[in-house]
Length: 197
Image (cartoon, rainbow, N blue to C red; front, side, top):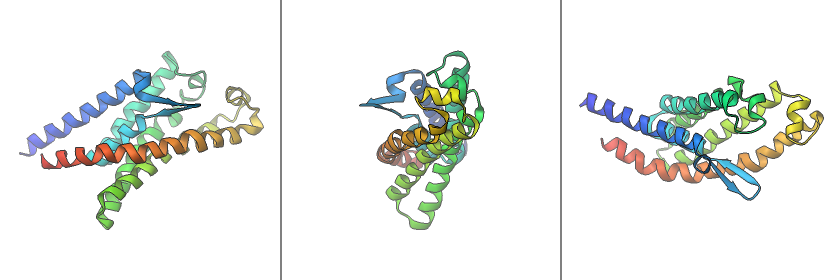
């Protein structure tokens, strides 16, 4: 019985990993253009994994996304910014791993104490999304507070913080709302199916 459960667990993890790989390589799956914004959806898959399978598996799927981001920065950059900042694993890999850990542990702790499934999922999704945005933008500012990077944002280096803050307010908060809506919608039935097995 335990062996069957382990096989089922690995199968679900493999499917979610495959989904994040597809999202990374197929633009319309991984990014949704909404007006001037381009919202990433990959963090939603990491959050779903963390809620359904746990923080370690969430970190694994997030790590896969991060490593893909890191490799692509060298061989197939997704933007002019990528070869400058995403070649640093602290910017490209660590924040993605932390999404899974933060979302997974937040869900476990909230559900344990408050026993409310939906609100635990929503809060975990919000914190998971914010983790990615804050760490990526924060590390860009810390490690790449340079004229070259600032120029790509269309500002001088003294205004880089303002430019990154504007990205947080637009893309970051929109991605947070997206995660708060979509992740629980998918994680709720998937978690029920997984627990029945």
